[in-house]
Image 1 (spheres, rainbow, N blue to C red):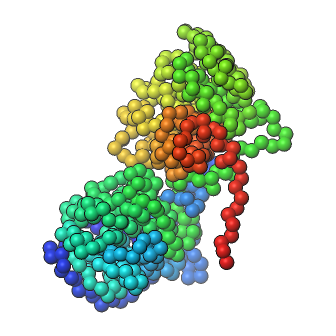
Image 2 (spheres, helix red, strand yellow):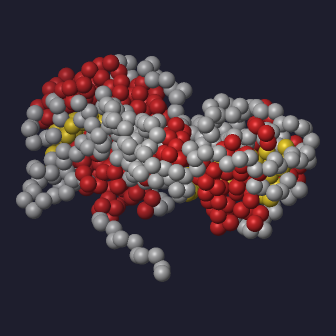
Image 3 (cartoon, rainbow, N blue to C red):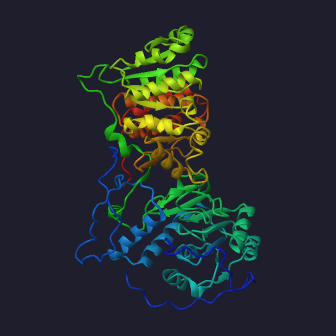
Length: 576
C-alpha cells in the first residue's frame, strides 16, 4: 500500500532497548471509506469529484498528453498508484480492505515460496508498515515464528496502519539497528521488508540505514513489500541505503523501479498481486511508460499479403565500412531476415570483394573513395525504391561517414543511426537535431551508454535515471532514442517510452547491436513507424536470445528470428 506522505527516513525509535515491547492500542473507530500508433487518445489525471452512488467515477476530460493504452504491462509512478488506490476507495473499497489484501498476498507468497523459518518483519510508520502487520498476522496463523519490529511510535502510525497494527496480537519490538541484530542472532532466517514503500522521497540515513545494513550483512532471505526500502519507486535508483531482495510483492501493476536498473536487480523476482483495484482505474491516467511486450504492437507487425512483391516489402540500404566488414553484414542479414524485400550493402570499392564474396541474396554496390565518397553514396540513395538506411555499424567515425549520414537524413528516408553514425556528431548534436527535424520521428538512434554520454553529456543531465535521460534525449533531437542495456529504454520525442525486460546477459557480445540496428532498419523498410519498429526489434532481439540460451553469437539471433515470429499455440487450459 502506498503512503500518502513519505515519512522521514531518520525517525528516532522510542527506546534504544532492542527488547523493548510497545503496547498495542485497541482498534480505533473505523474510518469512512474513502502520436505513435500505440498511443491512445490523451487523458488527464483522475478527477477528485465524488462519484454517484449508482455509477463508477467518470473518466475526466482529455488533455494534450499522449498516452499508451491501459494494459497489464503499464508501469506506474508512485503518484499514479495512489490515484488507482483512490479510485478503488471511491468505488467503495475502504483503504484498510486494500491493506488487508496486500498483507495477505505477501504472506501467501512467502508460504508458497519459502520454507517455514523464524521471520523478522520490519514495519515502518506508513501504509507499507501496515501491510507488514497484516502479513505478520497471517504468517503467525500458519504457524510461522514471527517477530515484529516497528520503526517509530505506535501512536504515530498512519490511520489504516494503526488499524492493522491493532489486529496483531503479538509483541511489537521497537526497531533499531541493535534490535535487528538481536533478532537475527536469535535465529531469524527471513526478513519481510515493510519499512518504506513507494512513497519514499528522501535518502535513508541514520538508524534506518543501520537496520538495512545489518540485514544485508547477515545475508538473509528478504521479501520486500512493493519495493525494497530505500529504492526510488520512480527511478530504480538507490536512495541512501537499500536492501537486495530475493523477491518483491507489489500490487495491481509494476512500478518503474521494478524494471529500471539497479532496481531491477535489487527487487529480485517481482510478483504482482491482485488486491481488488479494477483495471478501469487506469482509464483516467496518462500512461506514458510500459514494459515492452507484443500485446502493445503485434497488431502493427508487417505481414506480407497475397499480392505482395519484394518492392512492396521495402528496400533497406546498409552502409558498409572498409575494414570492420562483419558489422554491416550482420545488420544487412538481420534486415533481410525480419522481412525487408531487398537489402543492399553500399561499401567502399576497396572492400567490395569482401562483401560480394560473403553475400548471396544481398546486393553489394561499390562506393567511390576519397573526396567522392559522399556523392557516390547519395547517388545510390537516389534510387526511389530504397526507403530505409542503416548507418554506423563498422563504418568508421570519419568525415566520409559524417557526410553520408547527412545525405541519408536529408533524403527523407527512414534511418537507423548506430555506433559510429552517432559518434561523428559528438561535437555538434545541434547539427544532428536540425537534420533530423524534417523526418518527423522517422529515424531511430541506438546508442549504448558510452555513445549516449559522448553525444548528449552537454545537453542531458547524466545524473538522472535512464528513463529520464532517454526521454530528454529523444525530445532534444526529435527522434526516438533506443538506449541499450539490461534495461533498454525506447523513448519517443512525445514522451512515450517502453522498457525492455526480456533481454538476457548473453546479448553482451560484439555484433548483437549490429543485428538490432538491422532489425529496426528492416522493419522501417516495411513502413513500420520508427518508434514501434524499435520496440518490436528490441523485444524480438531479447526473445530470440533468451530462447537460444548459452553460447549465443550474433548469427544465432538472425537464425532464431523465424521461430520467434511463428504464432505460438495458446497455453493449455488449467486443470479442473
